[in-house]
Length: 207
Image (cartoon, rainbow, N blue to C red; front, side):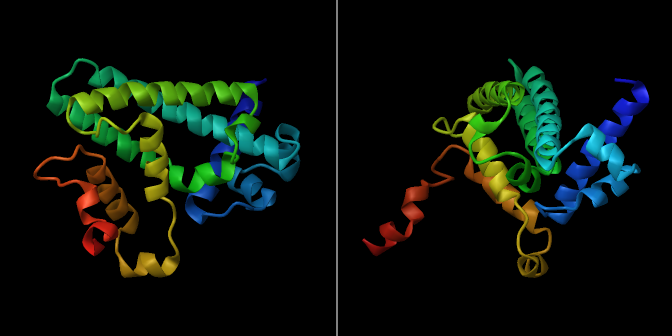
């Protein structure tokens, strides 16, 4: 593919991701994506004959960005002191949030990941492999409960950062950041200073 054609294709992918990230919609008109990318609708269809092919390209873009972040964190955390691990872990979590996982994943990733093309399944497997590596280092540094694996961390992270209804955003300033902070604290191992979750469940109080 020629350099200019590749730039247009990448612009379309980035435009689609940005629109989903900011508008939180799963059916953004293809014309709006083309306009955002600064190309005509015919250029979009030359690159992506249907919406599914565009979604797969966006998923690959997102996963590859996640892989880059995870590899950077893994290299920083491996055999590092606890203070370095904590900084790298925290930076990784917030960098993944800034990717817009909460808004983008539900749109671009099918309910059954086995429906993805083989190349995307391979990238997904790489993401999970790296997640478990950094999770292991986070557990070593006392930042992550030993019972929680990398996949659970990721699923919880994009659940905590999913767009909320507008009324809730108006009631709680910086709602996304607040929810993510609460979630990250909840990932930490239980200690006498951080009591067991079970002790505060409704069933425990009702017993």
